[in-house]
Image (cartoon, rainbow, N blue to C red):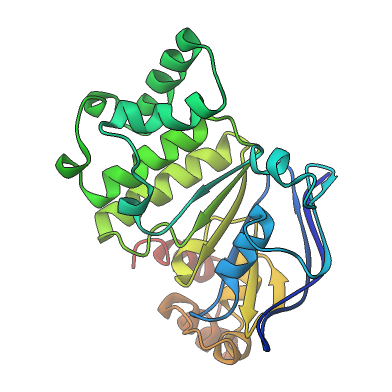
Length: 267
């Protein structure tokens, strides 16, 4: 069942088109990764889905409800979003305060609020930091707090908007582990990135370029399509270059393909 559906969505900044005739559906419990270079329209798309920008042409449906001026506040309660800069997301004096912020806005009863704070801080490995201040945390730790605060609000859809772009390699790996755990738990995920490695565990991948969807397919279909990625100003990952080279020589066995696929996660 489709949880999120975009149908012929257009958006422009003044006279400059940013989103051009975008249509796709995200199933409940599915992870779709949107990949493309800077300026391809990825983050604009996230803002449209959140209702932070109006939809001048086309339609967006979230959880069976049409996004409109009348429904935008109710729809936003269904969606959690993790942005790229963790410093801009931290609104509390301590980790505990930050996770509590959204729950207070939802008027969650205090005993339930405390239970959720403890549950989701533990889920992202931040339960030992509940009384810490933002200045005492790394970027990756702040992102984990942002995820805990989002999960505590029980969103039906989680959007990761370039959430790893400002993190070091360790922080990025931690974030990807958390996203994989969310997928296993059946969460509906839309991740936005310019890093092809971050699409490996998604169910499907959308390639965007100049505001348009070039192709939607599985990670294996997308990541081996050198012509497609070149058109989108993206670079084929080394393991998939090797796959294609072996395939051209009729030397790509199942064993080689499996080995190269696994190596893409670590290179």
